[in-house]
Image (cartoon, rainbow over all chains, first blue to last red; front, top):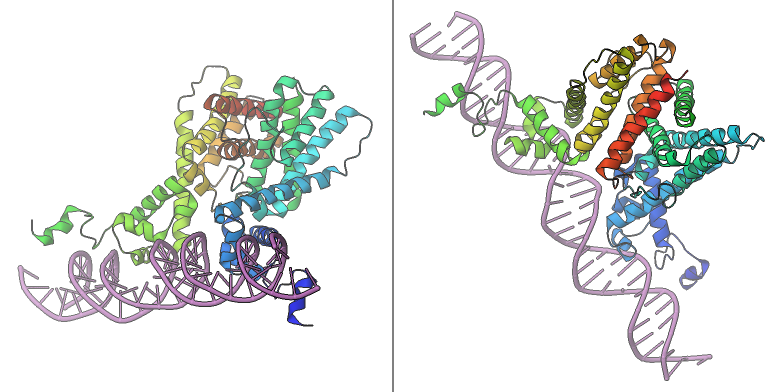
Amino acid sequence: VPTSNLHELGPDKRDPYHHGALREALIDAGVQLAREGGPSAIVLREVARRIGVSPNAAYRHFQALPELLDAIADEAREELARAMEAELAEVADAGDPQAYAIRFLLVAGQGYVHFALAEPGLFATAFSRPKPVGSGDLGKTGDSAGKLLDRALGQLVTAGLLVEEERGTAFINAWAAVHGLSGLLLGPLQELDPEEREAMIVASLSVVIRGLTKR
Amino acid sequence: VPTSNLHELGPDKRDPYHHGALREALIDAGVQLAREGGPSAIVLREVARRIGVSPNAAYRHFQALPELLDAIADEAREELARAMEAELAEVADAGDPQAYAIRFLLVAGQGYVHFALAEPGLFATAFSRPKPVGSGDLGKTGDSAGKLLDRALGQLVTAGLLVEEERGTAFINAWAAVHGLSGLLLGPLQELDPEEREAMIVASLSVVIRGLTKR
DNA sequence: TGTACATCAGTGAACGCGCGTTCACTGATGTAC
DNA sequence: TGTACATCAGTGAACGCGCGTTCACTGATGTAC
């Protein structure tokens, strides 16, 4: 194979010229670093090293490191949402809309905490460069995990378990519960064994749901 | 003043020999760095620089940097507890034990979140090197903030608002609520204005209390 | 269809920086006689 | 009370390291004629 043909064979790691999808490759490698060691493990030189590209090549695609970090954090948030969706896909609609709405919120919350426990590095990265959420558009715009929570709350409203005026409070409430639980289970409560952990997730979400829907 | 007398006058910044309280000074300076920039701002060389001591002097008092970091995180946790105590000191016992118990828990939670908002660097530092809390001794041992929460729950039990069997769940529940709220208000919800923020804190804690005490 | 040339996406070397830690040291302090 | 000496708590210099970023460059690609 003559050298001049290498480029016709598509991206080749050993031939760095015209990588073609370097931007995506940089983000992917960064996500991998985040997965392994959290936000502080994202290091431009190591990202480049993993792709087999010189460190300064990144500057063709990002103004500087922070811009790459933002892209990586975005990706981490997407992965969180995908993990939640995966768990939600298994929730069967069993006729009773009230039971379904409650179960949907519960599983969404479980998905959130499960992701934090399974991917602590990505979870921390997702919130290391927060995308501000305004009080007006809670769940409406922004990341897809927020949209899932908003959908869950909408179902509670439709089912008559939550009043529309409390939807904003409920949003923050439910989010705070799973977010806090995630932080604690990864931190001071890291010694809880898996069964205790799972029981706490369910109990915690149950209390929130009870508190929200009781009027 | 002859040079030989300097030491009799106690620690003197310009005369580094036999500083006397270097260990405490190192921790204090580290806490200050944490206050200003969070856990990642704690840097041994800068700590030493601020005291006016050579970097390696720290090795007389700490085996290595992580040991100093632990001491600083301990101190941050203490400061959190003190902030909560300060708010709790103003809670008046107004006869009704049920109302008092609820108010005590509410103010404890507010103190927690207020500290996070007022000292984000210290708050992050407090949880950057978590002291594991076992499932058996929730609030019994460990940091003093946990003891305050345990006291609050004890009062709820005494007042007949919480059953003893649910005390463990309640502990994690209430902690998760204020911890999560703190993280969100410092992160994605940082654009909420102070009134909205305060309303969310109260509303969030109310839901938890309602969910906990409703049986 | 072939060729000149601008553009694009990478390279290689170097920069200055600040870090944690180690080394051999030194001067002050406390103790034994 | 004075003196020899061990100990203690610091110093100063140096180490190796890895980082983000800048510079001038180069080879491949795409385009105009």
